[in-house]
Image (cartoon, rainbow, N blue to C red; front, side, top):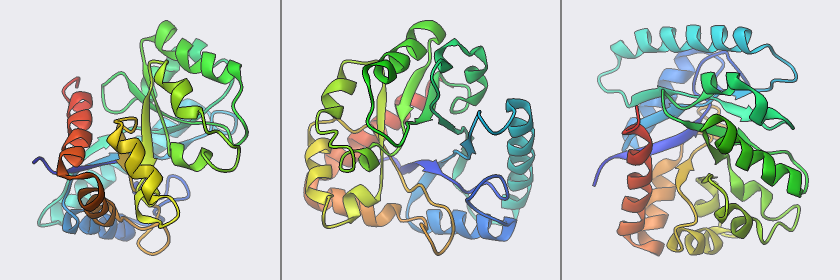
Length: 237
């Protein structure tokens, strides 16, 4: 089986509320290697209402260049891919600039949905991102929205749209949600997992804990399924 892909991280140094130093970023990558992670997607927050895109990209790309230089000192490093966690906003499907925020040079873009009940307009916006721009939204940490807003039908609504689903590792590792997570994975309603790691202490990389839980509860072929979904993304680069 191919190595694990962490599809959602905040490892880039000094870009957002994630890693605050190069030393911490390197420690986080070392932790990823120890946990069998072979690919890491770097997805710093982008809030278009607070920051100009060119400013964000300049900051992100400079941090990425510095990190790539620094990892040369590591005995081993996962393959690194640039992306962004793009905060949802009404009308984003009309912005050609979204293409500059995709995962690598693929048509996939990680979208952080609003922290409120989603309405029909929100679902239409996701559909329009694909129809107008040819991009495939990946819904970031969908597990966060299942409880607070009673979004019990959210998977069913999204299944009808040209989107993919990413959940956080804690969906599998926390006792209160692990059964639900495994059930959705068995149904192949989940396409990517990510640690959403922010530091070496608080919200640290924990992919191995999640993948071990998947193998115990859903069988190894479901972990292989997740990896096949990741392969389908990177083969488009």
